Length: 100
Image 1 (tube, rainbow, N blue to C red):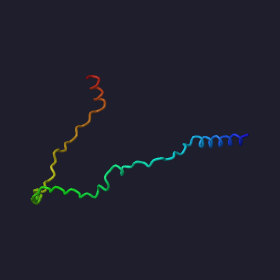
Image 2 (cartoon, rainbow, N blue to C red):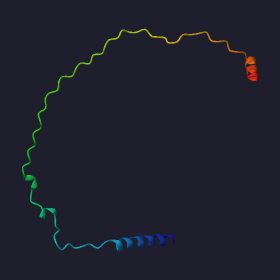
Image 3 (cartoon, one colour):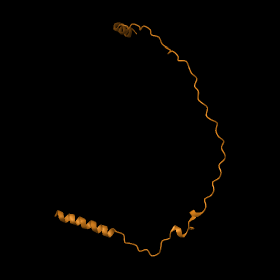
Image 4 (cartoon, rainbow, N blue to C red):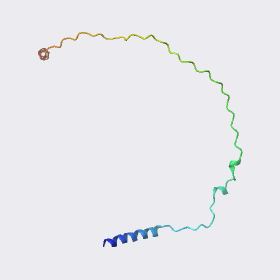
């Protein structure tokens, strides 16, 4: 039974292709092309001469970049070390929070 359905599917797809194909059209008159309406070989005309560009003067030579030489400076230390304060005792911290 399975062979019947597969054969039927192939037959239906072949019929769809045959029926859906467009019919060939016979050409009766020659096609009109752009060559029939345009002048022949327009590229044989002489090309127009380019317009002369304005004369440009030469630029002055670039200046040499000179950087001033700075003496090597000592590293500047903007902060000084100070002895850290003694951290308060935890009992003192608790008392400050209760009183405060």
